[in-house]
Length: 63
Image (cartoon, rainbow, N blue to C red; front, side):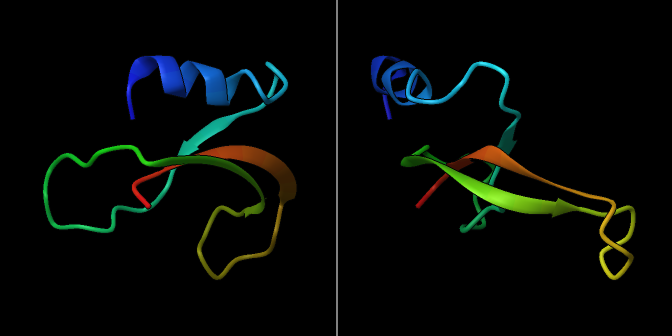
């Protein structure tokens, strides 16, 4: 994704939203950004721990 396209995609969302990087899909050190979307995610201190909060965030992803 080129910078212009990333800026256009991010402008579709409110400026107060948190931005997260999705889990890597390949074994390479770097990957090309291919999509920007939002998702509601839970926040926890431990992977199997209790949910402390839930929020809708922006996800930057290789896929």
